Length: 286
Image 1: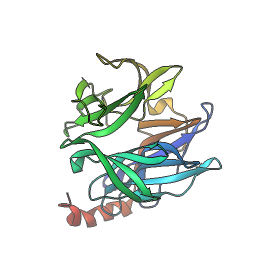
Image 2: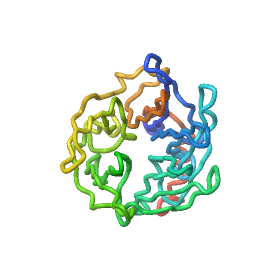
Image 3: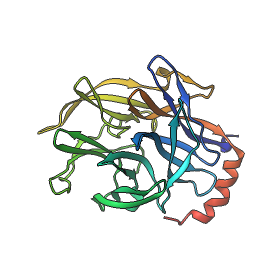
Image 4: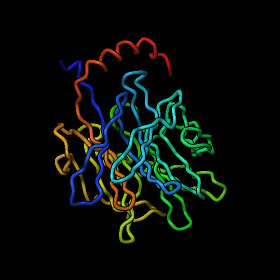
């Protein structure tokens, strides 16, 4: 029976701190993780990785619309020949941009939406010839900082890097901030509260995506400093579900709307059969 169990992720949301998180339905063909919220042309959107477990077992980027207190059906907005996740979306000068994780392409690229919902063009490359993931931005006054994670691709270890955007749009050489497996990997956008900045990270000490850490940023320059102020694990969360939640690794909010992703085991014969069927077809895809 264990062969038929797969680790799935699902997004949950709430609109006030006094209520439990409610699950957003996964599409039939995928599970969803890495939620990011953005308001674009008067509508609230949720972007996330969709892991296509019944086809290529590949990550694409999907979105759904938040209306009347609930999220609608998932739609695919970006599908490439490499794995995509962590769709960090933002609006600049009225246009929608996205910086998805795409380490298999060996770069950190920025994409601009040309035509809604699925026509994107690459607008730039923040880091070329680099295998970085989960890139996160911070605009502080006139300065723009970039956090990104350089995994070792062996276990959950890696380095949190910090770079700064120059006036010409190029990046300074990234510097290592920490290698602590409990706080290094980003887990959402930088939060602002009462004039203070908080960095969200994944706690991977016991397993990948086991929990979240919120660290207050004490100093950005000349030496970066932060200290952890809060840790969240599944036992700290109120979620309307009977599933046994085993982890949480992304948090974002926009206004009063908060989103997280949670992981759990899902028994599924269909996924098992699909994985055996497609493994031979896509084993050399990348």
